[in-house]
Image 1 (cartoon, one colour):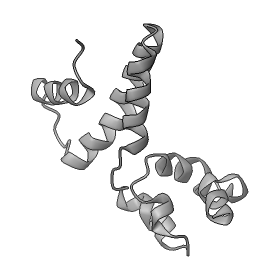
Image 2 (cartoon, rainbow, N blue to C red; image 1 turned 180 degrees about the horizontal axis):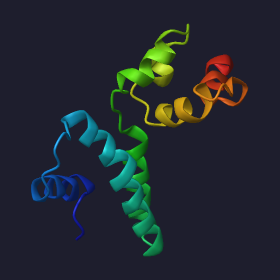
Image 3 (spheres, rainbow, N blue to C red; image 1 turned 90 degrees about the horizontal axis):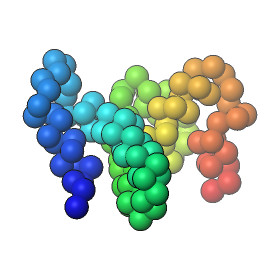
Length: 114
């Protein structure tokens, strides 16, 4: 049986010492680097069940947003439940908020449809 994503990640963290990699950053890297790689590997190996489990793990994985990102959304009147601890919020901020493309932002669309 293949190892779980958590076991693979823990082994990698033990094997490689990365200066400045704190728990929060490691937690985020786990979700934005390892899980997508494992999902692609599962798809390439036609292992749909494992791919679904990895996708589900990514969907429910939550990490606190870095302050420089959360500060932008905290200044709005949006409910923090919409964006806090959501991995896609970093992408949204980088490609929509910081580029003033508010009308295309999924966070705002979700807030207005709620």
